[in-house]
Image (cartoon, rainbow, N blue to C red; front, side, top):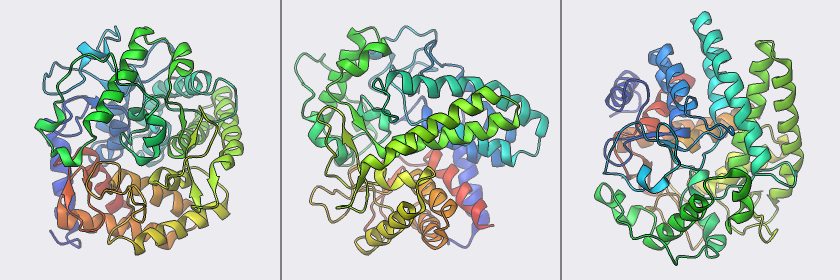
Length: 426
């Protein structure tokens, strides 16, 4: 499909969204991911809203309807029974009226809601929908800092790799070795029925994913206890940048809706987090990196998570450095932005988050760079993203060297991001 045939790209993207639409929520793709995922839905809502504003709002409202009483928004909502996915609700056993997982995902909802609100043509719908969501997202933000920042440093930790959205990132390797593999229940992976095993996390990683899940389940999913109990506590710059941006955007929205307390609270959370954010800067890598909260040390791993930091309002000098970092990565691969530095011996161009390109990451990096005045690099990322679609279709992720499509096909948030990139090019 030629990249300049934008009408065909839009038609195909819209068809994929329709194919994966379940009426009040979308699935990421048929088979491999048959339920509603948290950050998938929030980012997908941006594409949906270009086709149908009400449907875009409904996507986020459906997700937030399953917020836990303590404020957490789970990373999966199991709206239907489907034995083709593992681990399903019978493993999580969270006791929710509609089954959900017991962990969360990047808090992109505040950003998505602001963007829907700003673009809205139906102002009455936007005002009503935004007001319904405002308090829920505010409670989620407070939950993060209450439960994942117990010492009040200003940054939050993930307690399970799945929370980051970057499940098998090289960033987690060393800390993940602390997670035991004994005592886990016998299981059968279902993902390998739908995707090439060489593209997915390893069995050893899955053992540790399941150990953490069972550890938290044994504590009755009491979020006030999980941080201390988890041997995996990582301060991820990408995860925190998304939360900061969401707090900033929710404060902006609350101001316009006359909710001064919510605006002040979220602005203060963002400012405190930004002040602490500089502790994650690595001069060696020229980007932000993760910190292991158990050891207190920065992690020697230069991934897309550190580059995604530009999604928040980081200092301009850092945004410029991250633009240079993207250009450096571009010299080591045909396409950008690889999820890990291709110069690292641990890089794997085919395996999930250990090298491949994801369009949602490209979207957030490009958005942050554009806001920081780095328009050339942002434009390069957008063009490169559309090149990948033109040559490889709407895949889950892509090989940064060859552009080969990998993982699931007809992928929902990839289609949504194409609509977003095309909107920015208009």
